Image (cartoon, rainbow, N blue to C red; front, side, top):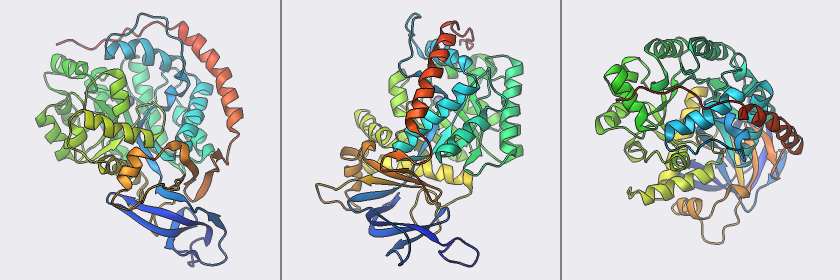
Length: 450
Ligand SMILES: [Zn+2]
């Protein structure tokens, strides 16, 4: 929508004097003012007179980053005590940590997890979070609680509830119903996907229910795929097929699907994922932390984005780690590779919002922008921006964040909420959360062995 057009709002803010990164794929830079009108970018050029100006000299204005795979529900786990025997493999990490934490969550802690995790993301320049939520003892209404908390912060999101059979049939059905309910209710800054945990915790019937609900709502399924070899072993032992084929037969694969991890996949599975057009969320930091391996899709995939898998919402750091891990893996890459992955994350979010220009700074694009204080000590050009990004940029330099045209972080502080107040509330609720967690034993669910 153009400024001052008959049916659109006039310009309300101009970011002036910045170096504007109009696109990350391909990288494109211009010295310009960015004029905002309503929830969109109105123009990139010289700001017209009379529009309120915000001095952005010495800064880079970037398209807001997208975290393509998050678990905001883990936001209150930092510093969490752990008194059980140390996990020796991925399944034990789930049984002894995450499948205990999710069962301890209630409404107040789901809300505070979203506020704390959402603030972390925004303050790091992440303007959209694609989340995968689990709280088996507070399913109904949980996605609204998260959407409302994130709307309070001014953060854009794509949400889903993680459907699984590991907590019984009633909770599996409740998870499907929660996704359906959320998908039917419009939110200004939130959209939905159909959430499913992973092949190894989903029966054929539940997987079919997920595929059916996704199709009925016209959205894709967001699911973990072959994060660990146990997922493949279970599919082969219980269903006689590998995970990607099982998901394909169930109708889960397609251009709207979002597949997290895809580590233990073979060449034919890589080809199948690319052929169906699904997006892949690569989570390098989490994969290192869980020692689950390195995804062959990271470099062979056609639609690969980056996620944190719940380890914060800082996509500048995640993209840097993605580059270093890729280099260590011996994958032929260059510093522009993680920037292309971030651009793919924005395309995935744009697909959910029906915004093909999402992730670009161009007239008509949604105004999701990050202003980074970066008075570059060396020459900065479109050609060498990736080198600056990987070796010089820091989320600590994020000064302002704009989502849907609104300045939601200004001078490194939320303009919407009292951050100290949220931290204080979270600390209090977290003590109760950790006390409940201490009483919850390891989860008994185990996949079928080959
Ligand atoms: Zn995950």
